[in-house]
Image (tube, rainbow, N blue to C red; front, side):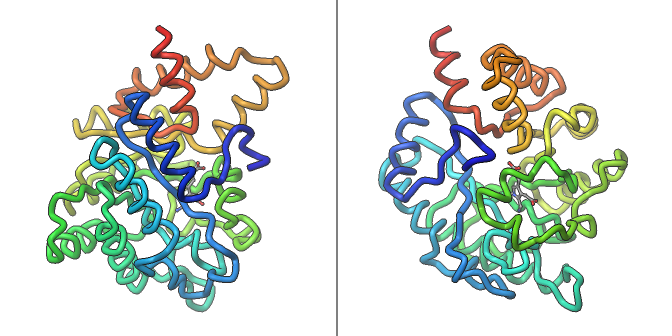
Length: 284
Ligand code: PBG
């Protein structure tokens, strides 16, 4: 991915090898995202609920390779599958919350059936955590966890990720501000987290990371629940680009950024640097 130097799109077998090496590095879990064939992207994002889509095939392949040694986290949102690049269904130019949730429940179920351990809704529709929890429970997946992207900001730091899954050009400059949070808001994040916890989220995610350390701190100290932080693609790109030019020391700045998350109260970090950092930590 040109805007994420060092990050590659992998085929199913390559993902299985990466999963095995993550296990060796004692990384507890990986999150996978699909680069969907543009011909399969539709207005209604129906490929998201295909039990044989790229994500479901890949989950089965990972589990074949590493079993329960490694947790597999699957994103729930429609943007990698929709022709408009939005996380939800669109009608008359608006993302429609309630109809979207039906599709998200179906997407969660096919991923759980494929064997994923953690369902991670990153779509930010209101009320989806409770509905997904009931859908999973009623189909016999009560042990599948839900990690809610509860405090997710409408951030320009997602740019390189949108290049990676090919949703950026579909979105064509449209904003996600009707469902993601405004970067100007702080209390709203606590409100969103509290709703998702009431609906049954097992853990919550704050995203992006470094520009939102205050939110990580507020959420983890207020709720005392497992609070994760996502060091997003733009954060990876910034640190990588500066290190590539010799402007920053890659190892020291990356470790310092992760230490900052820990200091703010994060229980875990989702980061594109994971494998590299795990091998540094192994070196001691
Ligand atoms: C969307 C989704 C996004 C990311 C993860 N899931 C982007 C967006 O909301 O447009 C971004 C992650 C990153 O930047 O690394 N469901």
